[in-house]
Image (tube, rainbow, N blue to C red; front, side, top):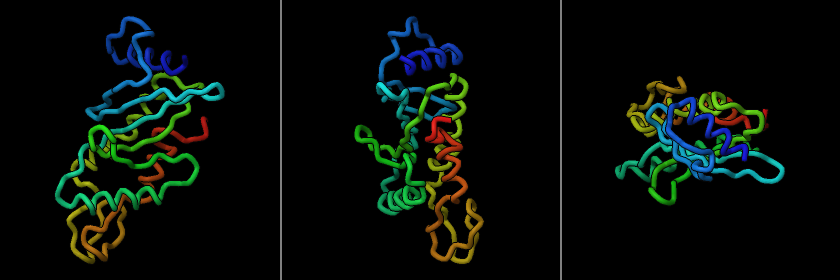
Length: 174
């Protein structure tokens, strides 16, 4: 029930009309600063949690294979313990950042702020797909590292870490 109560409070703060807590289902779509999130209730008897999918959008057809390879590289940078990870949404083919958020003790502003932490990366990805057009020897606009192979830039580890625990969930429930 915590999932529904938390979302009901989020809707109240966000001025989203909902007449009753029972109107909030177990799968909810929520937009934060023009980025769509899908929130799913995955609570169990021992843990109140939600799964979030931050919709990064459809990967472009041109260079699709290369773009998806970059996302797999990013997944390999994520820590092993319950990290968010990139995936392809099975229903619409969009790239999503998918993760778990322990919601015990979390207030509505906490949830909204955690989701909002993903927004800049989702917007950046929609513009660049993390494949900046660089020449060998140029500096990556994100990592500050010199690019030895054009188009091989991936976001800096600091951004990956920000998505993880400093983003939608620290995975420790704290």
